[in-house]
Length: 141
Image 1 (tube, rainbow, N blue to C red):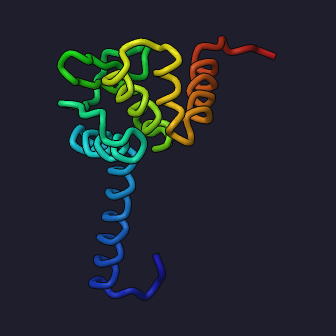
Image 2: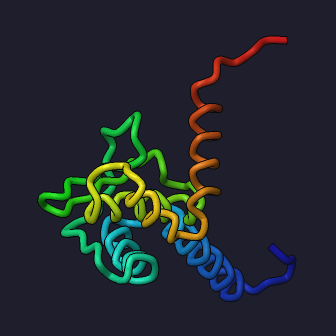
Image 3: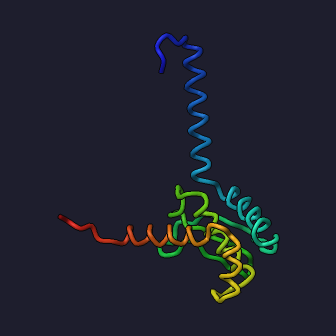
């Protein structure tokens, strides 16, 4: 902090920095409501609004999946392991699950719809690399 600030100026500066940090954390760790809003926006942008989830929420119990979907009731669950990852990666997982609302299997039609998301291939590579790094034993030299 610059020397010579009045206590009032110092207090305003600290408040401004705390607000910035809170906003950054909110972007890094969106709430369930934020996920639902993102899912609806992604559906409109990349799936012509055809995928309409009933809920999208974070879950702690997915250690081997990034997300899951129940097409019968329209619920989507996103693993909390994604929190803090780049937003385009989280968006990819949301898109993947949204497409399951339209196509339950992983056939050619499913992947064609997923590919409407322009960063799909990049996000898959990111997640594969992350998984590989997380599951690799540490080598000693």
